[in-house]
Image (cartoon, rainbow, N blue to C red; front, top):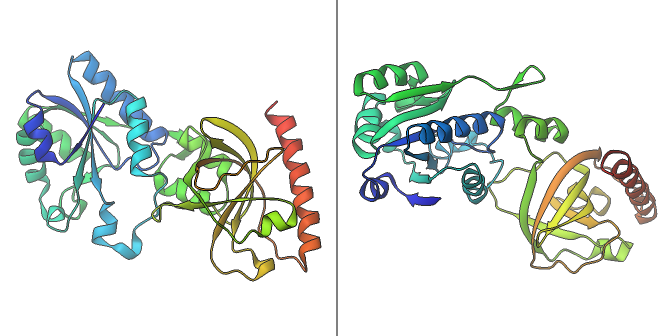
Length: 312
C-alpha cells in the first residue's frame, strides 16, 4: 500500500482509473470495514487499484472546532488498518475552509472525475459531501450516471439492533461501555501512547503503574478501572488500567495508569498499546491510602477471576 499526500500528488502519480472509497473512517468500525471490503472486492473484480480518500484534519475541527469530536484512533492506525484490509492507496488531503466551499458538482467533476479518474466510488448510506454537506449518496449516484462511473452505496451495519457509527461508539466509550463498543468496532478498543514519568505513587503503594501519554486528539473511555491487555513489543500482558483524576490524592488532571498483573517491567519511554476488555468499576475517592490498597487488591482478584472465567 502507498500513502499519498494530496489529491494533486496522486493525480500526477497515477493515470489509471481507480475504485475509491470516501469517508472519514475514524475507528475503522464494522460499517467502515464493509465499505472497505466492498471497495477492495470491486477493484479486484474490475482489475483496478483501490483507494481511500481521507480529509485531514476532521472537517468539524475546521468548520466548528467547539463541536469537533475526539478521534477513536490515530491517522497512523487508520492507515495501518486500511493497509491490512487490502487497500492499494490512502490519499490524505488537507481540509480547509476554502475546500469546504466547493459545490457537490465541482467535487464530482473536478476532483473525482478529472483528478482522481474514478471508475467507481463506494460510500456509506449516510455519506454527505460538498458545501455544508448538501450532497448525499443519492446525488452521488445521479452524478455517477452523468459522468460515467459506478457508485456503490453500502447500507447500514447493525449490532444488536443499533446502527454502527463512530458517533455512537464515542457515546458508548464515554459511558464506559467498552464491551458494546468493541462489538461495533469489530475489534478491541485500544489506546496507543508513550509511557512517561508519573509521580511514583503507584510504586510507593506496592502497585507500580505505567503512565500513558496519548495524542491530544484521541478520546479516552469514561473514568474508572478496566481490565485490559497491554501490548509491549508484540507481547500481551494482562493489566488493570485506571483512567481518572485520582481524587484520593486531590489530583485534577486526567491520567491513564496501567498496572501489569503478575509481571514487573520498566516501561518508561516504551510505546504501549492498551486494549480495553471490561470496565471493573467507577473511579472512587478513598479516605486514605490503606483503603485504596485494599480496593486495588480486590480489583486484582476480580480481574483474575474474569480472566480465568472468560479468557482461559
